[in-house]
Amino acid sequence: MIVVTGATGNVGRPLTRALAEAGQQVTAVSRHAAALPDGVRHMAADLAEPGSLEPALAGAKALFLLLSGDLHAAGAGPAFIIGEAAAGGVRRVVLLSTQGVATRPFGPTRIAMRELEDVLRESGLEWAILRPGGFASNALWWAESIRARQVVAAPFGDVGVPIIDPADIAETAAACLLDDRHTGGVYELTGPEVITPRQQAEAIAAALDSPVRFHDLTRDEAKAAMTRSMPAELAEDTLDILGSPNPAELRLSPDVQRVLGRPPRPFADWAARNIAAFR
Image (cartoon, rainbow, N blue to C red):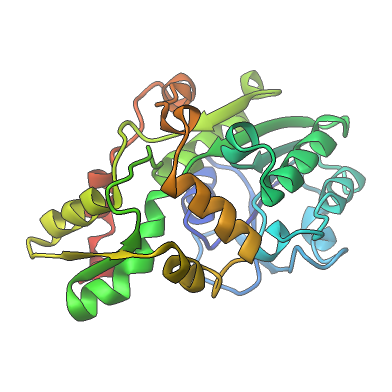
């Protein structure tokens, strides 16, 4: 049995599907129920509540750990989840961390994630760590404004980073959960190109075959919007990267190719597959 947390999200959904198609027994964990592949068991849990995950871990051999947004807040202390996994008999944990642990180690949320990585390394469990950069699926924040007004509103319109398709994260996670060769691996996951928000808007417009206008937000405007769905510390750390990426954050990582044997998907591919969200 493999337990997938965040199973109804942009990474968890394709990961759950990939594991089920590989013939694995899967327990999908999320706060709320959602449509799942045939044969996948769903269990509701809130990772922020100690003990909430324990029933799902019973009999599991591996855990994919994706923290909910509130567990990125300062003082959240999610390390107890590793202890619960070990106590439940889990042998392998694949942790979805963040690129910023290496590139911005002193950001508040990065310090907390580094501490969680260290707890996992010292747990005695088999482990792998995934450190993605920005997600292509963050463009879904623009879906409502594109549908209603054909507008993308975002900060730093002409500053690019190599964002990653969540489907590539999911496939890499599946490989790490199933293949012993990836035990002890730390993988930085990026897309194949540096792409700006304005260029992302152009890719969505091309997939829609309809014009999309770009509107630059100030940093304060962007932070106000982001903090509706994430802790303020995480919004600040994210905006630091988006506004002024350092050389390490602009590097195109070879790790997707190393794990999957193929290059990562470009943003235009993600936009074409998800264009229904913007219509």
